[in-house]
Length: 208
Image (cartoon, rainbow, N blue to C red):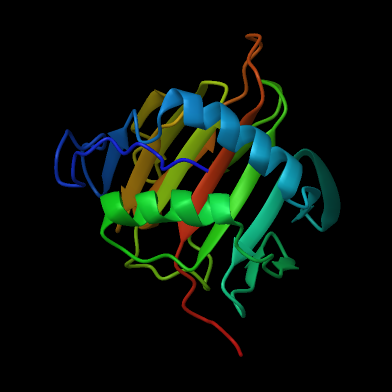
C-alpha cells in the first residue's frame, strides 16, 4: 500500500469552529482523494461490520448503520448499555491512525468505525463522554466516502453550528468540547453515497 498524503497544517492552525466552551478544528484534505477510494474499499471488505445494538428507553434497538470497534488489547468500550470488545488493528487503520496522531499530537489506542449506507442513516445528538474515555484527550474523526453534514449544539443555550465533512477530511474535537456540546451526523434526503467514519479515541480503563 502506498503512503498516504498528509495535509500539513498543525492542530493550532485554522479557526476554532466553536464560539465558546470547546475547540474544534477541521482539516479538509488529510488523505489524498485517490487513496480515499482505496481505503474505503479495503475497510469495507476487511472489517467485521455488525449492526449496532442500542438500548434506548429500556428497549434494544438494531440500527441499519454498521459499526466496528478496533483497538489495543483490553480496550473495551460501553455505550448505550452495550459492551464492545476490540478487533485487532489492520495495516490500513494503523496508517490512518498515524495521520490522526500527527495532526492531534496525541496517541490513540482505539477507533470506533461507523458505516452509513446512505443519507437516511445518521447519528442523533450525543456527546462522546463515556466513562472509559480520557476526558482530556482529543477525538479525531476521519471521513471516507459520501459528504455529510455534521452539527454541533451547545447543551445549555442551544447555540448551534454545522459543516460538511468531506471525503478524506479530519475533524478534531479537543477538551472540554464533549462536556459542553452535543454533536450529530444529520440525516438527509439528498442522494449521497456510503460513508465510513473513523473516530480515534483514548480509552483510560484498560484491563489486561
